[in-house]
Length: 298
Figure 1 (cartoon, rainbow, N blue to C red):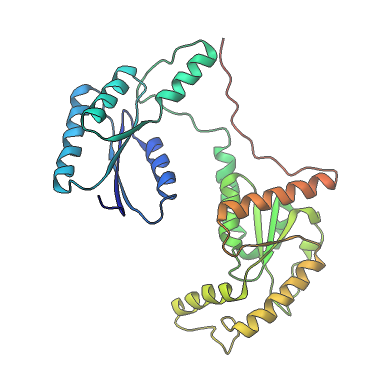
Figure 2 (figure 1 turned 90 degrees about the horizontal axis):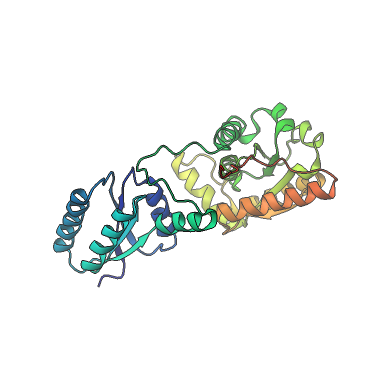
């Protein structure tokens, strides 16, 4: 059995995107595996289900040693039972991603799911807020509009390539309006940074050698501009730059998060926790992105 390959077949009565998202999330936890995700959407009846399994069997014949996992989402219990039966008959590892959820909700409420395939899923209550926050982050990348700093929930400050932009976008995706401002030695940061609540500001830093590696790749992409003569990709000057940036961050009274080797989700969570705690200590609160509230109708 190949230990570095896996095929995930997603079978669904609708688009299959929900199962595909879960498959991609699981895929990220197996970075050494080459994983292909194959979708079989809009499987509405037994005939189409059997046809999908014929396709799976045909691909298996081409590479019989390739392991296969089947993920499925069906609202109809008979279709779920059929897919489970077909998986077991073909000795395929499988997971019912929707059935247990529907059963838990039914047990908790005493009600039965409608079981209507392809019913539209309404946009989450925070969808448009998150889109707005992401657009805000894009408009205010690298502090291009200092006047917008006053509108931000979170302000990230740090040296170039320390992770400000991806973190701003991710925080926007979560729903926080975020501005990132580059700190450059010998250049005074925008005055607006000293006019807002300090609890909103978080400094970013990164290991000097890691920063050199990132900048060197960028320099190569720019045709060599910014090499040692300019100091952008010179290790000794990067150390000096980080020292000066740290001095500016201390003058702003902001905590500092080291992004070296830190996953973007972890860094973002740490930043939100820091800002939230500092806001509470200041007698206020970080704005909470709206979240969907589900109510069971009588």
